[in-house]
Length: 188
Image 1 (spheres, rainbow, N blue to C red):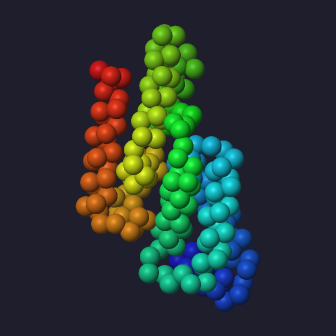
Image 2: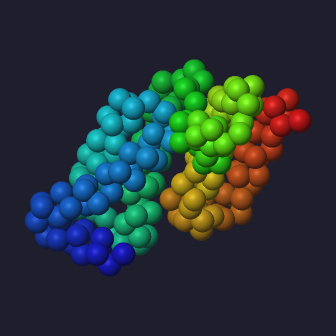
């Protein structure tokens, strides 16, 4: 992403319009990652703005030791973790766009032969999955969402979180194990 480094350099040299380009380029991605953690539309917009405010304040000292994308995502993750710690949230509304489960529910809504009972069961499973993800410790939750929902590689997650790939694998393993235990009644 040499384009990103060029934008950073332009900003560091006084071209404030470069920051507008960065915001326009990454606004949706940052919102998605924040929403994945927070699951509240209004809070996600506010926290996305907080992310870009932190980026604006820190961009002058960005040293290009990691990719800009990794640096930006790590700021977003830290903002989410800080918010979650402060708020001590109750289980959130189910994730409406959860990958395979959402596809199943979309198929139900399009009339692909699912019974009404099956539709109710899938929606309940989706709700339970969202609840179970909210029960994970912050680091496990972050790794799980980045890997399973955002589709990032273990190396990318390692860079974002500033942890070794082995540590990321351990967090993912423990998250998966805990989710399996929390959902075992629904997975039988």
